[in-house]
Image 1 (cartoon, helix red, strand yellow):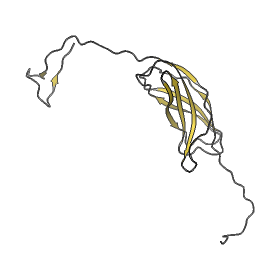
Image 2 (tube, rainbow, N blue to C red):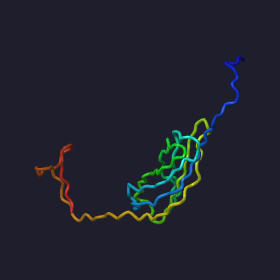
Image 3 (cartoon, helix red, strand yellow):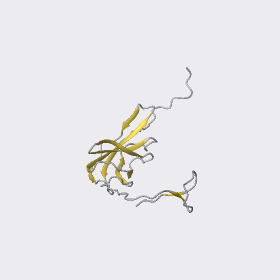
Image 4 (cartoon, rainbow, N blue to C red):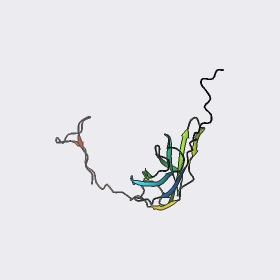
Length: 168
């Protein structure tokens, strides 16, 4: 082996650490089953020594009647060291979601292919409990129907042509 230069003595360097803290969550609005704009929020603090790299996310866990698991995530990549920001995930509450008390938590995860896969960068956030109400019941009764005729002619419908369907 050959050395490619003169020895320069000790060199200072910094080992980057990735750590986070979620200090707050926010109450959920629009909490009816079937809502498409129910936001889950987490206030993420980058407590490490480096900017969050790609593949760093805040994941949201919901527990409620018949549900105990992750419902979604949001990227926090690019959050600089020492910085903090609010991040949200819009959860489209399924129309068949059971009504009742639900609680959510958030946690920061990072994926590193060279570092062994997924690892948590934070502890779980404080919990946020709210109530999901049942979706409204939509129903109706058809009391009468009429024969189907080709529009404007009174004749039987033909394939590929418009037809009028009548019901009461």
